[in-house]
Length: 537
Image 1 (cartoon, rainbow, N blue to C red):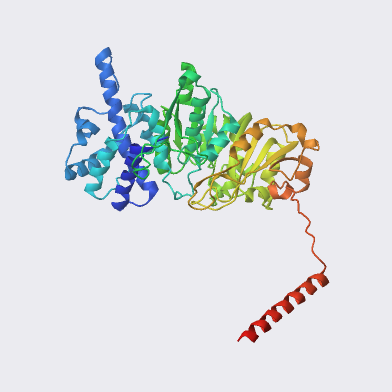
Image 2 (spheres, helix red, strand yellow):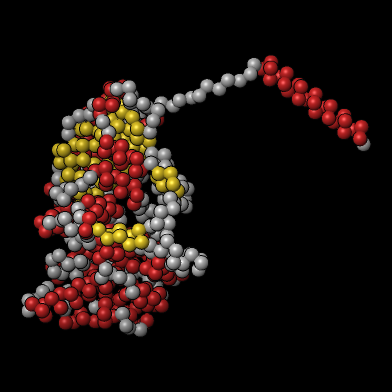
């Protein structure tokens, strides 16, 4: 968590872009990402130079003798006109031409080479570039404890969807999904529609917390700064909606072994997207969180080329898949992987992604995926076919209904989380009705006390299938069980309203004749009062 001066720096940097004429939040984040990348390349180069001088061992240089002027430490002091020309005409082409071979394996930066070929400087004003360079130079990118939070705060300003309908999934929703999946140090985790990389970065944060000893946890109380409140409040404890002081908790992950660390850095996290901008943002997000070489690729995972380019990931390669795929849009059926079409004959991306996820999982692998409500009750042949696949050929564990305002201000669509294990078959499905997620359900999304997510996670982990066939299975409650037989008899409908029972309290009213008599008496009283008033005139 970041507060105070650092938060203020990000706000000021954002404001500079806004007033400088760049108002698309995704463009702002992308341009800041480029500048962060330029600085981090030089930081890593300096670190390797010092190490080489100390050990007398050579290293793979990022900048040759003719490229030294492109290093951050050298360009950041240039005047406006010279800086702008160098960044536009030399630095960005350098990004585009650099390859992973030119970057030492394991260094932050090699990951980006795949996504830099389309990099473009969108800053048009020389003065804005100067200010942006100054501010990025002042960010604590050398502090591993704050880098991830810093970038997440930057991403929190992303309030518009991408060109392909992607949007940033709220981090508290992701956290709940990750907790329910409960990944381990041996897991291979994937998001086939990576977006900003939130599912992967939060999974890593969860693992750090899970594998930190009591001695490996640092707690820092947070206080209000002058920038965050009135002068009279400065120095006072920062409180949450419950009146509890906010803490910045740092998890070291000191219980993670070197072998597990290598797996985390190179083979645990896998992501794919066909939006280069999103990939750049996702790559930076993961690197800022401390993952050295996450496996992130430019790829349309619904296309038949996915299996050709990434056979190990495309079919039965993942233990855990977390995703919030694009909800809207259709695509060219000829380009869709034939195996997916055999599972579900459709052009709708929201159905194809669920089929894709089922295909990518190992037998016994699990997924938590957000889908629009239409997937749960749609009556088309494809909709029914997909739900039948989940129920008959897999273990559909849970259907979790989310409030319709969860994804505001991006969209007001009603959604649900589908949790299933690949293989086997379903006998009962656990339903949960989330009515509040800790924030108002309007565009402002202000923090509130009402929050079902902690209860959701704890009840999911403690759910007992024996309850499904007992009198304790109360369908009027937030959580309840539904049998496979009942689901199949309803054309595999998975909408919670199909099965949730509502209790109506009986209201008793007086007989109409009695009500009429009372109305007449009341009217007579009014007429009597009016006559009394008339006599006073």
